[in-house]
Image (cartoon, rainbow, N blue to C red; front, side, top):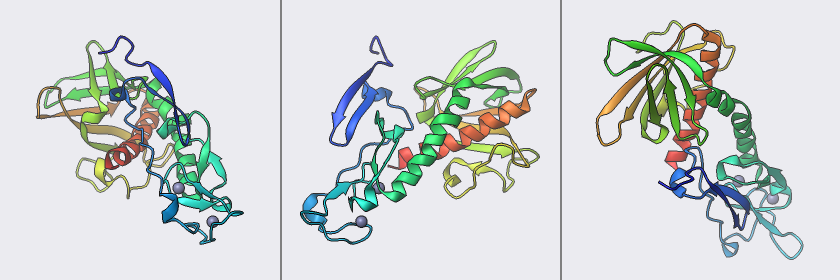
Length: 244
Ligand SMILES: [Zn+2]
Ligand SMILES: [Zn+2]
């Protein structure tokens, strides 16, 4: 362990300035690698509108997908937190839309997750539950659970996640599993059946066994359901990062 595990450094890439953890092992689990740029000689025409590049029509690379576009098809500069860019960077229309949605995650849901919410927590097959505050760590890498006891779950060790909505027992079609997130609509804040609990399976350190963890909304159900909806959105981003 370095003395400053959350230390950051500024690096310059062809796409712009990036603020990244000093130790790559401490990358945010939501982060994405920069794409390889399509080589200049492989793209004589804009990959969107098919305009031929020449001395006047210059080519630009989208910083998110690395493809080649004319200025018209790749003019927008959009924040791209997942690649740790300090400033908004040039992106194609498709990527720009995705990045804009993610900016909303960084502005809203990520803050909700780091603030935390109170749940009734059951670990494994234990009969006992404990009231604990669950929150995402500042570096986004852990879920911290604090009650009379404390433990943490590393996000990279989570193998499956289910967010359950009110009134739906496990096994119901309303369950949104970690792997089916790409097809499922978001469980949104203020929807008719708010999220009420979450089941996680994760690998514990030094063991290949899977541990079960269940979080259930208790007193402050509103805060808990907003936190769970944010976690649901986070899971989609995690899934994409791992899929890369
Ligand atoms: Zn174009
Ligand atoms: Zn793109």
